[in-house]
Figure (cartoon, rainbow, N blue to C red):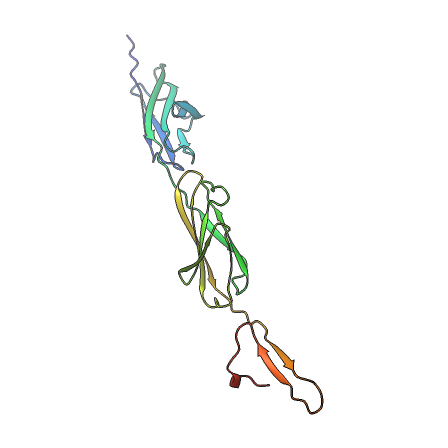
Amino acid sequence: TDVDRAGSLLLSGLVAEGQTVSASLSDPDGVPAPGGVTYAFQLDGSTVETNSSGQYTLGYAEAGKVLSVVASYTDAQGHADIASAVGGTVTDVDRAGSVILSGAVTEGQTISASLSDPDGLPAPGGVTYAFQLDGSTVETNTSGAYTLGYADAGKVLAVVASYTDGQGHADIASAVGGSVTDVDRAGSVLLSGSVAEGQTISASLSDPDGVPAASGVSY
């Protein structure tokens, strides 16, 4: 009497988002030639991919689902067989977001921070941007825009974004914009008095970057 001995499946690889798992078949009655096994990969009991390679790459929306695989084949003794294995629950992976700063890092200029995250972004207003100079926070907002002051020259600009991504991960991303470039704003001179023979006129200086002591100006 013929006896169909059961085959078995082994799943290898990390059962986590973004990882590739491999199924390998063994059967005491012999395995078919390469390509002769059909592997049906399942998540929570529903087939998501069928192939003959025995490999499946887990997607980034599959965390928490239970992975399993069913192999259908005819063994070397002609038995039509099925073997299965359970890989367990797919582990969540939090992919890092990133921040890009745009605009000239120069006194008086407005720079903008834009966030990207492969796991998805929150709704508008859902990101808190902390703008820093030399490591100290100078402004926090949700717009992602900051105008550099005229006393910020030489300080190092950075921004830290705090948010919850589209898959529910509480994340932080940061970027460094570099040292703030100095801008020399023009001063102006005002003449007062009657411009007539025998009259005394006076020159007064103003400068948005500040004026020196009286002895420090040459007219």
